[in-house]
Length: 138
Image (cartoon, rainbow, N blue to C red):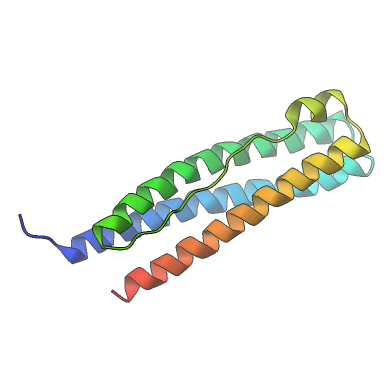
């Protein structure tokens, strides 16, 4: 069976686009969680904590999906002789403490975790976009 570079490029691009979709969904959820987190820190209520947690849970699901999609993208890139280690940590946020020890300090620690996750997602988006541009030039 003959190697079809164009077919492999299309598959890699599709995998990269899927990873970008998951990353952007996570980014949107994290941005919303950040905004609700700020509200929660400065006078929010159980309601704001609940909405923030919901956004964080959605972000975690999207980050888990993005992790899977990035692994798939990495496999597809090997098919076109490109090798990248595209990994993302999807560790948990401080949920138990956020619910049961709702205080400024705990809210600040959760906000820090949200910001770190946002930075990681934004870095992954930049990296995937850069690789997709490189694929176009093959």
